[in-house]
Image 1: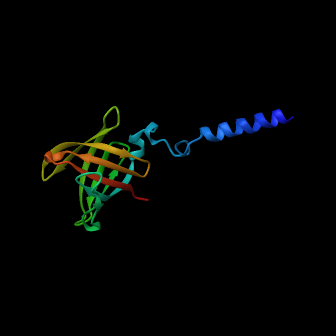
Image 2 (image 1 turned 45 degrees about the vertical axis):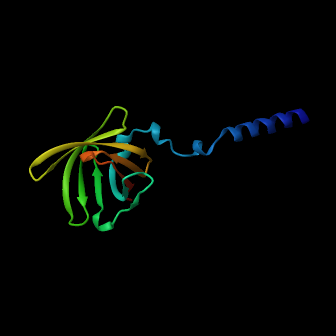
Image 3 (image 1 turned 90 degrees about the vertical axis):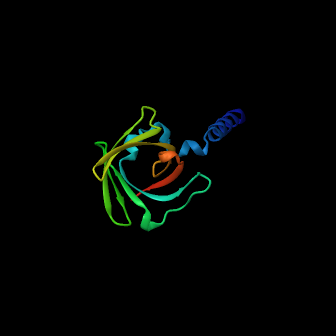
Length: 140
């Protein structure tokens, strides 16, 4: 009887110790980022490195809306101007390519996902030979 209780307690401890905090958190790495990206996102921080991010001025932030059909809009909050775009993710879902039209000209650029969670992501932008980071949070 003591031996059976000992085995039950031992197995219980092994099961508990094998579960880590990470096991209880959503595994967004295994989820499809294309699906997770759909929705509205607002810039909340920006900066030249992940260690020097500063809060975005609400007047100069923008809201990006990503749609399932790979189209979207970027709304600049300062003047409420809206810029449509198309988007696609690389096979490994680490790079997003956007094509936008502004003042009659079409341009394409890539951003790299520095980190990606269900309700927040950080992008690394190398546009114009200047590295910058932007933190986006899901609009609820």
